[in-house]
Image (cartoon, rainbow, N blue to C red; front, side, top):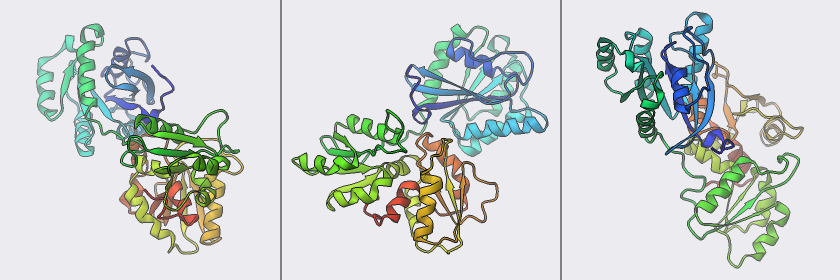
Length: 395
């Protein structure tokens, strides 16, 4: 398996169920080796634990074992909340229930949660060899709207093929992310990727959005040219025909827009990811709020992942400076990696591209903002607006 496949491009499968339902044993069964501690002591798994695997017809997957849904006490409540958070970001939930135990209220509540949130799910009955038929009939009657499979963690080899088949079938229903360039280019098109190598660029590699975009160019049989800003004019001049699309790091919009002819489409990697990872139409609509923000507006800049911030960091330095220059130096600007519970004071959110997360994970992180209809744009769209390139750079 390619363990370097990013989490954002991996299928996310989450195991959930009561304590001692057999979740960790099921995880070991799927991996066909011991990757999780198994014990008869209730609550052995206290925090979500994720492992990477490549499954036959699914490709790279991240499978997460979670704490029991029936955990008790204040600490148990926090563990359950963390488990539910992982579930909302999943592509497939494996609802694990033991056939040698009667149905519990926590299982009923969780089943209703699955239906309410419309989570893609498969019910996995464990301890099939010790099955109490009465418990099975009771559970099967209550959990009637979800597909199920029986297995036994003490005889994993006997159940493995059928279990894997069921998991693959259920996972195939998961929503797939669009390709970076879907609907924007076609076979044979010429695309130029402008990738500045500056102090913010990682050593000896490209950043993930650049890598994914280049790969999508190749997958779509396009002719891809990669250059820095300083080589862009020479690259354009060397082409017999004009490129169909030029894609640049959003921070280089000002320089690149002076070089690319007005009749050539121009956009940014971050804008492409606004479409791939977020609600693009909502982002674009929110641009109009930038023109009417009050001078003391509260703006939250959201970074989805943790990374080392440099002296000229885009989220904490460059974007705040542009906001104060374009709007007002009285703005209240807050940088966060997790939104506060109270969102009532926020006038606008500017979010990163979410390249390290799946679309579902990103939308889940932003759901409170969408629910309260708070205007939100992403880095790329904001930088296009700030450089006078909106709507030209929009896609």
